[in-house]
Image 1 (cartoon, rainbow, N blue to C red):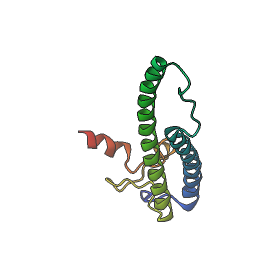
Image 2: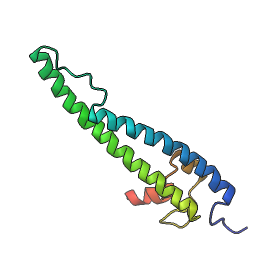
Image 3: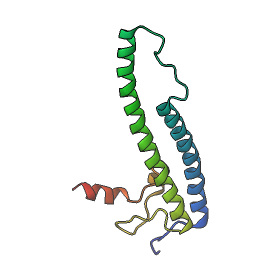
Length: 126
């Protein structure tokens, strides 16, 4: 039997639904992170003692940097998921960019935006 070269439309639909769910969650997380960075729900230290305010503000800067890093990662994740939806439309989703073979369904269910098979990813490190 010939090796399968792409996922069929039903399989692609299954992955579309998974990706759309993850995309909605990621967009919601990203909006929460953006709000945290812009301090829309500010519970600052404006009315506390100067020493406590200085300590709290220093901690706040670190927290904002961490939040900004998380937001950047989330935005990249959103882009990767959107790109995966484009590959579904083009019917190239799930095809390893290095080997040209199908990426396992198990891998795609865990990392739906994957563009490489496990084997290709391992070879990339060596």
